[in-house]
Image (cartoon, rainbow, N blue to C red; front, side, top):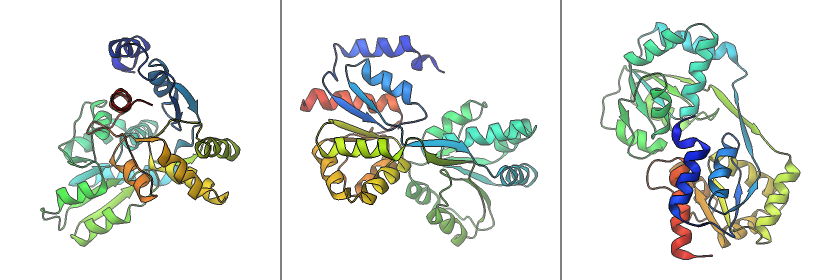
Length: 291
């Protein structure tokens, strides 16, 4: 864990903001992977945090497929790798380590053009002493497509590290249409991380106006809570409830997923789509708008 993530650093950051800038605000946090860290950031600023992790992340159970993809990437001369998430790069590195081919994997990465969808893959690369060669201006699939649309991709061998197990037909279709040879890998999967009853209780609190802020940090969170609300025939009431409160999204992908459901996003970082900038944005919003 980096220095900025230590409890002491978080406390210092909160103190610099003065008092309890989020005092008396009830904030729903569906994050799973970094739930404790995110909750601490908020509680140190006075917020009351409702924890309801919606989605867990696991290694892909198809170990053979991942191993075969890694071997292909190492042994064949790829031109580019498109990295959609830092999580995916980290898990591929761990897969390679378990297979005894970590050094070969990192060496192969060093030889190709590394295209990142936003800053998070870059963080993962720095952990193995590499860095992206180019970063999409918009941290979205469309951002990558816009960036590559002016290039001649005919005949290029392009690896694509997927977002979870989402196929991303839009990106793969674009690359194929441009004449590229595409090899995609899905190193991790999403799964429910709380009982449906807990999610239903969360939905009830939103509908009844018991919460002030709902913070979404991934599109699978949106998918799951919407699915359960729809199953209980409460989707319209849930969306109405969200639109009466403050909805925050960690980045443009999550924001687009919310807006597609008719949910207004009031807070999102302008860049650097991480938790700390998101919390800063929330503090700024509260200072400007009050409760």
